[in-house]
Amino acid sequence: MISPAAAEVDEKAVLDTYADIAEAGYGDSLAAARTLDAAIDKLIADPSEETLAAAKDAWRAARIPYQQTEAFRFGNPIVDDWEGKVNAWPLDEGLIDYVKTDTYGMESDENELFTANVIANETITIGGKEIDTSKITPELLGETLHEAGEVEANVATGYHAIEFLLWGQDVNGTDAGAGTRPATDFDTANCTGGHCDRRAAYLKAASTLMISDLEEIAAAWSDGGAARKDVMEGKAGLVRILTGMGSLSYGELAGERMKLGLLLHDPEEEHDCFSDNTHMSHFLDAKGISNVYHGKYTRIDGTVVEGPSLSDLVAGKNADLDKELSGKLEATMAAMTTMKERAEGGEAYDQMIGEGNDEGNAVVQAAIDALVDQTRSIERVVAELDLDAIDFEGSDSLDNPNAVFQ
Image 1 (cartoon, rainbow, N blue to C red):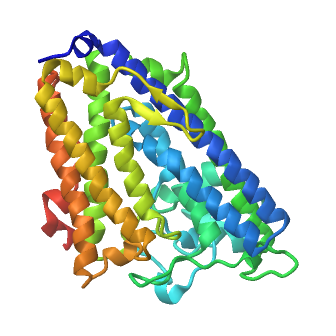
Image 2: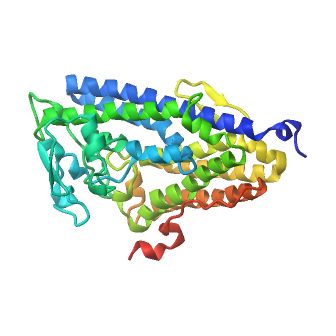
Image 3: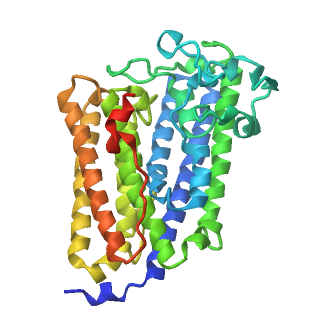
């Protein structure tokens, strides 16, 4: 039987809640980025293992709200056009700083900037043109270096550039251990790694730019903002919600971020590869999908943003389907929790996907299977709401695994 409350839910109310959660999530991401920036200032002013550890903690904390916003990707063009500024991956870290070439390599046929090392060089060459990099600024990173030469692996900005600068390379493969950059890499008086002043300047410029980028997207979801206006389109708005849920669930998270790395047993396909924080990023992505469906988000200050939800709308039409999808979202979170707890118990995600680790592989595969299964129910919701069929993002790793090895 349909409850009166469920039957009364209208599309506009659902879209309002969705936009409110987006505004809150990006607002929290901005606040956490400012906290990270303050920790980076302390690291630069007084480089020590303590201030470096505090900056790392602030980076991890900054990922908590941001990863939950990824459910707003794919369906919202404004978000998709913007997102690469802050969360592009994987990156060729040799563009930014020194690398251990015995594990990283010396050159790449696909990327002339594979080992450009901006921190060590006051000029670099891009497409035959000499570029002045003597002053490391947010503008240099965002306008000149990011995706330079139209190479997506030239990630010069955002969370992962900052992550690399805080942790350094993870050269452990699928063995235990994350990056081990020393605090003295930022200490001009006791410098290791060379060019410590420029490394600090790069870290600060990347942090400053990320705050500016997050300010932009938070404003877009505020009252009168372009992203909020764009989603308030009745059934077209519902399509945006479900496109984001299904594409993140299937092609992006289950496929590109999880199954691909599992098939290849390759830690280079790990999302937060320098910090070994990948288990949390995957967990939070899945949580973001659930947040959107249930119209409920817990902010970093503990307050809750909630309202009429897609779940309410579906329940008003087909209570069994709502129960089905809600149950599958819970099953996914349970599988993600198992993976997260395994990582917290000492086996990092890159170890879980390692060749020969049958138990770890199975834990990751269970989470992938749950994501794929919930996507099938998301497809049923699209049909139940009488929306045009949605072409969710795909992934060869799920749709054509043999192509991965070609």
